[in-house]
Length: 594
Image (tube, rainbow, N blue to C red; front, side):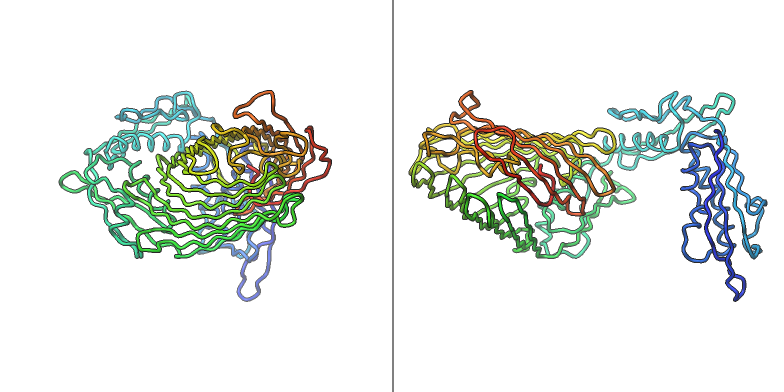
């Protein structure tokens, strides 16, 4: 039906002297069915019915008169450029009423909207156009004409010139004509690019405990270069990435300097100097895990970070003992070059797993190069010493390591991704000092996410690991791979799959492959249900071969969204595999499984 009448009833108060009597107000929306809800949402008058406090007649008239402009703006954005709008208050047109002489009571407000024809774009010109500017698909001839599409096209035209250095590009003239007989909207927007500017001074504002020299080193301000808005975004990112600043906002000067340079002001304010955090996780086989972190920002006045953290895992686990890790890391941004962060790590770690006991001390110097917001590379050198015990006996080793890692993170949300991908590849060559031989550890972590409709997300993950160089008997035992548990195959016992060299002798493998898939279905505003299937493979060879073993697990879970990520509850069952695990595994934590 073309018109649908939607009535919303509410009791609104109208003040009558001191009596405070109450009347029922009817707000009636008469509009095409596909517009009724949007008209009601845009209307201030309709919004008054949700007001729990008494509403005076003068307020109702004021809201009704303001609705003319609000509804026209709504319809223009939908492509209706010849609407007829009538708003009556108890039968009288709202525009003719005086709020000063408002009646004592108002019974009915009717919003009558006849949108007319839907207009399409006839000719659309945003000119001149800077080289490399992509046309706006929504503002092409034949598309539904809307104000927002035209604004987007204009903004894209201005931004195109700004990317060419014309920081003060602006609209100089515009001519918009509605052709009613043909229901077309023709637009001609002229842009004045203005002069091509270079970056001038970077002025600092705000109170910060970080030394000004260090702020400038971190910002890496390229004074004298051609203006580019992406440069300003990069500088803001560099300042925020330190974690020291609560805000870092760049503002362009209103007017360029006589020498065609443009000054920019950076407003920075500090975060609290210290931060504490605590986390906990539980699995029926993995046991309890707790972690704590203490962070001091700007410890030496140059935005350096000192981070102390500890973790205890496996309390009450089946088959293994208690693991722990204690570490201290000092990081310094903008070391040697703007986007290079240097760090020094000292760490001790103990692993007491079903098939391995290892106690490791590590000292490592590392650098991270932030190539872009979603791409980074790290490389360094480290000294590592460990004592290990497995089914082959006790072994000690000391090695030099040369770690290299590349990360690509293009997820839409790191805590709860629905699209994009994540890829991390790491190489760790090591040189023997004592107890083993030279080799290299390779690991790969790939994750992808795809949204299906509005409520369903499919997530997939692949893990690959390899130890090449030493034989399986010579390789550092804590470098070898096991499968099973919350991080690999849910439903299977923790690290239950390894390599059986002989009856009663099981150690980790030199190669590992893990595959996981999840279907996440949103069932409410915060609640989701999840189904998953995991598979893991371990072999004695350095690369995938027929000599290895597979096992699988499957199950379901629920997620409850919070500001710090979804709370996760998973129940896993074992599928296929060489062991005799038949139990039910429960995993509780914060954040998605991957």
